[in-house]
Image (tube, rainbow, N blue to C red; front, side, top):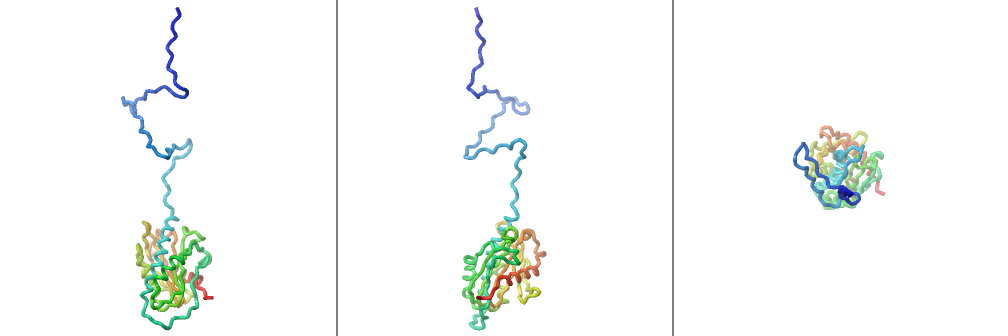
Length: 274
């Protein structure tokens, strides 16, 4: 009599393996190691581990200084527009002795010998706010306004210059410069850390008033100069914001250099009326 064949192990469908008894838990624990919780359902797949030879992902990069500068520049535009609120307080009503209208303020494609290139002309929006504020000033007859942003080589992140101004016929120009800077110093989040002083840059007959402000904007802090000029036909403020403004000390800001820059901007933006 032939012997029966030995029992065969159970067969499993292709690709499946027999159930395995989990090994003991870590550190020799007599209890089986618990299976991990299943991943939470969602539309996005789990992030796989890096491939062999690939370094693991590091922490996210810190926010670049370029982005910080751009955040401040947006606040500077509002600051320079707000400065013109002071013009309505310039003086008493005088219907005569207004200077003749000879010059206008412009926003050329480049400024400061081509260093800065125009990135945004805001004359139609922010400029209208200035005109609305100055409308009714007794010693200012406004023709038009100019508000523009310029970036180094056309890139605001590398440094930016903002000009905000008017042209028309103006009296009391010394008070005009002072009141523009006072208005800028009242902007939200702004503190005047070096008071205004008058500077007449060498080789010019233009008096420029400059102060140093510190601006806190959306958690960022920047220190930079703001300057103003006013003559019989034009009145404007200029703010220059370099990446170094994020770490500058107020005592290190050179107001004489800022005044020279402003005089240069004036020479390139003021043009005879056609």
